[in-house]
Image 1 (cartoon, rainbow, N blue to C red):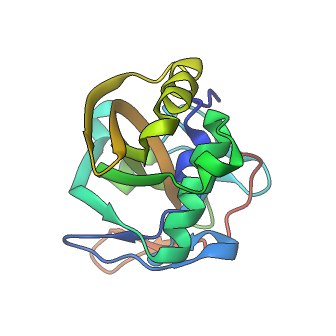
Image 2 (image 1 turned 30 degrees about the horizontal axis):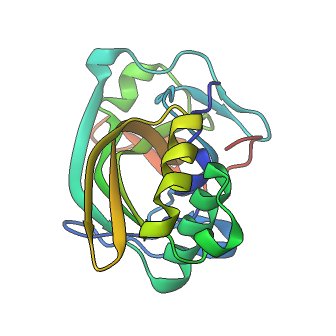
Length: 213
């Protein structure tokens, strides 16, 4: 599975603003509603793929016509501890010096959730677990003190990240990176049985485990 170099940026995200609030237990990277923050965010996620505990998704996942983007959020709101965790991870990935890292801030935006449209069409049986949903981010704004701008730009370029906007004020520089399109969180559910109306009943797998996931 390919892992874009912005991986560390999204490891400790915590709350979505807008239609749904999401809280987190930082140590376990577990999101309300059964979503789990990925250890290594990726541009590709086989949503709908069978899930093997301890290994991860198996197979290509659902066909494109069986996938739907259910929600879209314009921004992410982080609590103080988690926001600092994101900023530290970002600074580490960009190779910033400790003094620059301490002054860096980051804002995540343009988040969407991709899900399986029709569980029955997957052909799985009761007891099977599968990757049901994935959260994806597309934009980040990074702010640092002006004297650290050159170091920040060099770090972004080294990671192959495209800066699409830049501004300054109050002795700080803000760089916007777009087109990231990284999946950073996911949810796994297990099929229980068919309901009275023929639909498949599911239960969230609370602790999915797999390398890099």
